[in-house]
Image (tube, rainbow, N blue to C red; front, top):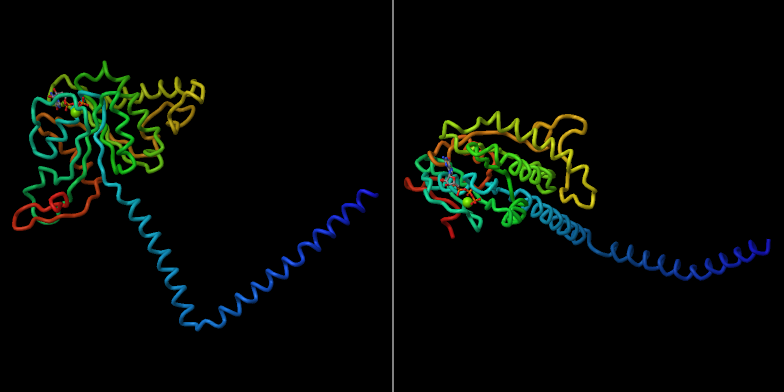
Length: 290
Ligand SMILES: Nc1nc2c(ncn2[C@@H]2O[C@H](COP(=O)(O)OP(=O)(O)OP(=O)(O)O)[C@@H](O)[C@H]2O)c(=O)[nH]1
Ligand SMILES: [Mg+2]
């Protein structure tokens, strides 16, 4: 009983201590209201309008920054033909004699096949990221601005590289930067100029099987060892690319002979860059402005 009495006294003391603060706050509040009432309504509205305008401007800047992602990233194992494709798309020739790339190739250009077209033409921003395992970290630099990923697969030497290619693709498809923005992925089966090249259907099925195995083995590893941000597919179901949250499509190409229409369609559909026009029969693009 004595304890309860003591608590009651304590509460009473706190209440008394808080009383001056409450009065002070009430005084400030009244002063504030009086001050606002003294301001002419036009000034008040103007201040509110400025506040609203600034907020909208900041929101607009954020939205514009977000939609700035217009890069198409060419990725895949070393030797799959990314650099040959890059040159073929840009110059219409394969620049025979490419060597393993040590640095990313980057450029904003009008696709070579469109340079003779008149009217509205959109340039694309393309990056070719080297496939060497030590240089793959570079990929993370470009993914935040990516509007599309072209994963190049060597359709000729596919079987010996199937596991490594599937592992690389698995890592890409589970990255937060790719999953959250649902970046579309094109699996491009390259080198189809050779009769021994595997078909895109065969490559798709083999990679799905391989990713299915990877999914099982990786989920068995303890959580601390897993570098992947997201998991793939539907638990309990055999993996297929259609289960991915981002759109995954398969196409064929030959960078060497210039049979690249399917990858060009993907670039046109996903690489949203500012429009440019032909001026006096000549192509004008943003990269020329600099
Ligand atoms: N037959 C054939 N060979 C090709 C084709 N595209 C590329 N190659 C050959 O494949 C080899 C590798 O091509 P690159 O473009 O250098 O490969 P990459 O993917 O850039 O390789 P890294 O830079 O190491 O990541 C070269 O010898 C090319 O000539 C193609 O469409 N058909
Ligand atoms: Mg290269």
